Image 1 (spheres, rainbow, N blue to C red):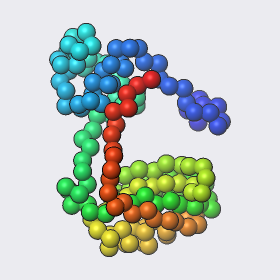
Image 2: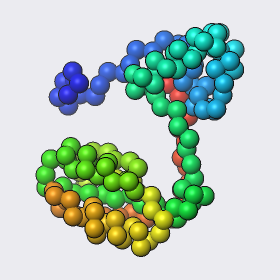
Image 3: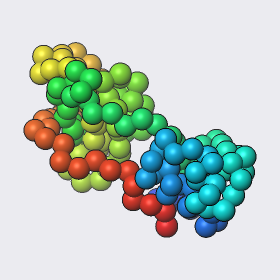
Image 4: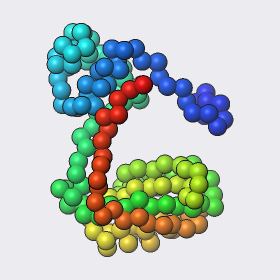
Length: 160
């Protein structure tokens, strides 16, 4: 369990104020240059590059392009609530291996797992549900929440 005590969340990575400011700069604009970030946080371009590398290597952050699925031809998004009769960690790994699944989280409550999917259309969603997700060992039942409109999706919540 990565040195964690059972039932306790991992301790946050120790970040100094400069690293936090770098993260916040990239959350505001992931294309911002190291030189621009350096000016904002008081470091050289090389020092920023080194810090960003350490932050990504350690898993504290990722720098990625966030896309609008509809602009790329994926017109159906849904969240699927899954009730499991088996080890949810194993099931989560199997779900994560499916290309159309972009988000998997283990939960407590009505569902054991939530999985977000991005599909081209309803036919692809139906095929995904019936041929892949519901056929996985340990899937007891599913409930699909089709997205009508993505109202908010931001990743700029900062650091603590």
